[in-house]
Image 1: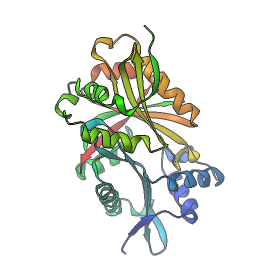
Image 2 (image 1 turned 180 degrees about the vertical axis):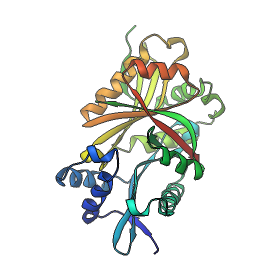
Image 3 (image 1 turned 60 degrees about the horizontal axis):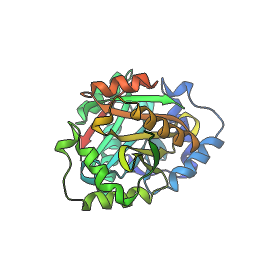
Length: 148
Length: 148
């Protein structure tokens, strides 16, 4: 059944949070209280640099990612795009939906003038590494994080 | 001599571009024409999510990085901060200026409510890896890029 992509609406937030939590790493990080997610949603959608993308199939949210457009001086003033929080519904993994989701993110990035798209993925996510390799992403960088 | 940190001004752009280009990877990527950089600067400073930080010593720009605040649903609606385009003047590397620059970025991220700060660095930048390790960053992720 076809998946259609669009920007997220406020009413999608519970489904998006459920998808973020249905994940080996996400399970320990999310909560049932929707208030912080709704506040974050409002911050995301008021920024013109943000595209919170959802994939919908027969009225059900089955995929999501967050695309951020980053203006920058480097690379002759290039705009780059950052992808965060990529998720596909558990029963649809390895079905091609993830590739369609990334194609949607890349199309939106290109339309906004980005010349480069980038993302990081946890070192433990071996299936994700193979997925991005297949889609033509180059594993050129190391990703560092620090809690504040 | 003390380094003071502030947001970049339009007049700093040529010095910032010179610093981006004075780098093994940056040298091949930058140009002498300032027009694309000035356009990118204008896009950066009109976004409230962007902090283009410069370090100044005796009237000279000696360090820079770009901090972006990223609202997001993940991690209970956490705001995270992304650092890009970190540079220290060649004659001041290993002098402690880089650590001051990162402390400035972290303080700005924390003041804006970010709970996590993240960055990627090219796999070939071995001195940068040791630098971020020393500052308490965890090399937990792999960084992927794709040209659009």
